[in-house]
Amino acid sequence: MERSECATRCLAVDPGQPETAPVREAGAVLRRGGLVAFPTETVYGLGANALDAQAVANIFRAKGRPADNPLIVHMDSFAALGKYILEMPAVVSALAEKFWPGPLTLVLRGNRSFPPVVTGGLSTVAVRVPAHPVALALLREAGVPVAAPSANASGRPSPTTASHVLEDLAGRIDLVLDGGPAGLGLESTVLDLTGQCPVILRPGGITRPDLEAVLGPVELDPSVNGAPAGDRPRSPGMKYKHYAPRAPLVLFEGDSSGQVAAAIYAEAQRLEAGGKRVGILACSETAPLYRGFDVVVTGRCSDSGSIAASLYDSLRRFDRLDVDIILAEGVAPRGLGLAVMNRLRRAAGDRIVRI
Ligand code: TXA
Ligand code: MG
Image (cartoon, rainbow, N blue to C red; front, side, top):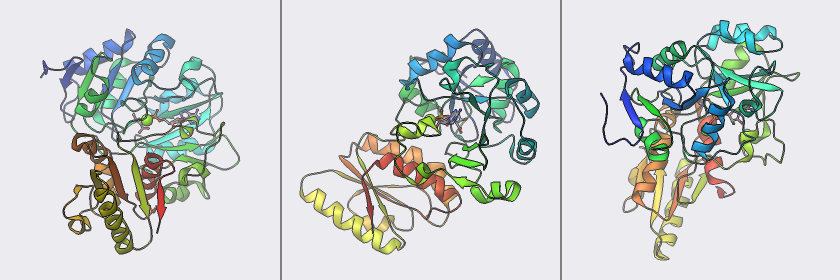
């Protein structure tokens, strides 16, 4: 099915039967140097042939992405990886066996097969095998490794539906494959395997305990919990503001959800009295406490998976509500909650209130 209102062509694909004409066409677009947005099990990606420097440069142009922020290369199998890396640490096959296809990105020493525009000139390369059937079918069809950042305009919340992609990139890319909502809702875990100890550079769907069960101790890069990344962070993406809706977002963190809610309510009343239109990001358990304000519910407090799945859509909803400021509840930074808090802290920048 083709939707004629798309300035960029938008083709629907049934994830249950992905081997269809739209995916064949998308593979051909990638092979001839075009840009294709496609669903993954985390968020939608914006793909280009990773061996084609010009095509990859067009990703940066379409997104408005800083050139020193390297891309993840997507492959259809673990077997495809050997061709592009300098050495294969023993743990890689154990991790691949357990977590691929899936939301785990590995940073490894590259053999410089990819043009510098992919790696931001680094000697390392980030790789993953995605689990979404449409992504895998597209990678097989393209027959080349595919560099793909999230398919949003740089700095905006990542897209979890084809319409989010079109909101940001219509007219700037060749094709969107619409496979319905992405699964997890947050980007993959990025794990750096190039040092003495494995380091999580970005928390995501595969949690620290999941990784430690295979690897033993795994460190968290200080930027994960919001420490300033400095000029030369290990993950270049960490130095940029991210995931932000248009209105400024203030994050309220604390151990007691009752105290957090009381602080948000008091601040919302104060701001409203000053003439501001206030949006509140809350979970379903606490939402009734904020009657009278523009509340967007992002899942259940007791289930970080439900919050992860709707977080980015919730942030985009505030743009449509046209609020002046967003007050957001934090969640417990455990399991997937660590990834949720990492994204909320980065959306907040330095506007964090600790209760
Ligand atoms: O789930 C995901 O990972 C999605 C889907 C589309 O696969 N992709 C994604 O890509 O989130 P992007 O470009 O939005 O985020 C890639 C992150 C950035 O923080 C980047 O700095 C980091 O990975 N990265 C890429 N290559 C790296 C490298 N060689 N060393 C350290 N960090 C790297
Ligand atoms: Mg991104």
